[in-house]
Length: 488
Ligand code: NAD
Image (spheres, protein in one colour):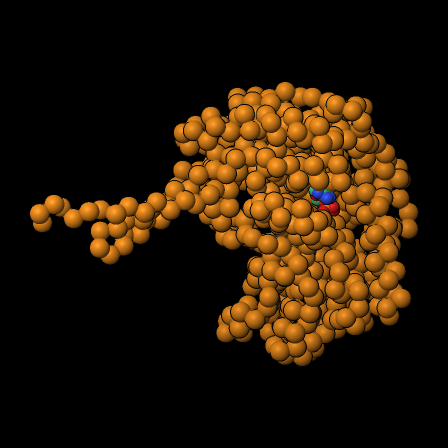
């Protein structure tokens, strides 16, 4: 059985207590590795290492920091198949998705922020009457990076790369459910010659290692992606300590299809938006709203498409839908579907685990069929709360005003899709829907330069491009008075 280890001060280490958790392969339902159940003492050692490494790393020329990160990216790319397989086994996602999305995006994150830091600049303000202001942006010290299980290496590198590129050192805590590619990232960093202590990875549960990292007095910066409830707990700890926090939280994203939309594209992309990664994406289009004239035919096409998605062993190249990440999460998703039934929802397809095992190897796996639910009141629980599984609700609407009201009818505001061929309507609806990202006639098209984040309970702050570089740096304004030339 593989033993994942912490990575502290450039060395792999076991937790001081010796405590370990099982790392389960979700498609099989059995442990295949163990992961450290680290405690506050392990976190303290990692933070101390990161603090020691900070002054030299902050002074390291940005070209050298960029070179090292690009080197790490190259090492991951060279082992793409190994990384993709590890991500697929750890999460239950199709290997094909890990190969085409997760790992290439992790490589892109490292390259993007390594080179972005080379172009980062700050402001100067020439004030009237011989005064000049310029803004220094300096790294803030040790950054805590806490990431979830749905896109493990993708989201971990999305935070680590800008933190390191701008000269911070990092203590990262990946999800305890999916630690494997973080361990492989540590190996790549070591092989690339990243100085000891610059990146430290401490594995363990949120309530243990995670909470200890958040409350550590020598960690002034916290970048977190995960659930809204966890985000609130982190904010409650961090606020009175005046830490700088970025919180990327849950979503309950509307996908609005007007009758004038290009329907082939809208159907195909709505299916992807609902079911990619088994719906375990914060950006999933989990609430589908369809304008009345096309509602029946659109929903019929969605149901047909959902039924055709190939549920199977994630390691099989034909598989389009893998397993959910854990038994507990599968049970939560099934609970949400049952609640929807009790609330009067009609299950148009799916609604539970497959009738027979997807394969012999995967008999004990955590599979749920792609599920489409109609007939729910927009105020019902499943239409307001994040399911984070292969479940989409469908609801008809009449006209723009109702579409916008339905879209805005949750506490979340992460992402929204609008399908229409009417340009003016697209702009109007984009303006009115409360959401950090609006996709018009597309979904999950990501340019790493754009601001990314959520409104309302979907988060605080923005990541991406300059926003991330600004987040991980402290602006300091220097104001200089330039005296008049004597005698002038
Ligand atoms: P989670 O909040 O349970 O855990 C996320 C991370 O936080 C894990 O590493 C966990 O160990 C840690 N953690 C848990 N409790 C903690 C605490 N008290 N202090 C410090 N750390 C703690 O989330 P999850 O179940 O791993 O991920 C799913 C959630 O993540 C969904 O809600 C999803 O929408 C959200 N998510 C958001 C984005 C985004 O960009 N907005 C992206 C992906 C996932």
